[in-house]
Image 1: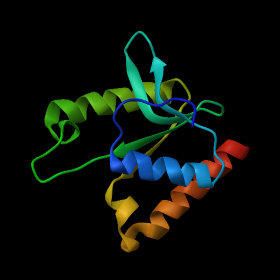
Image 2: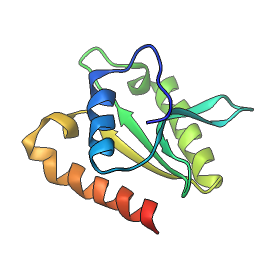
Image 3: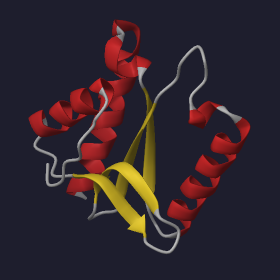
Image 4: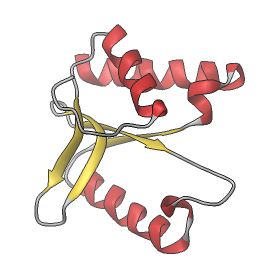
Length: 116
């Protein structure tokens, strides 16, 4: 991990540990567009692989409300237009044995992208 910030959610900490264990070099809170002030939760700068941890809650997070969701769609589409591969990981994948295989499959795909 190259960059740290004052606050990270437990999900982001957990995911960063997983990346560290896989020996995947990444940057945290990576700004990929200065003009639009867009950032990724995690970025493997070369080969342009990004990971977004998608938090959800019963009360609704900013990302679950219409405006936030629309802004996220704009951000992800812009990132794709710049050549980024964006992996979206919902928080339940980090805590549930039910989703363990989905998470390990995603991590495998990230590892393949990094090594290719």
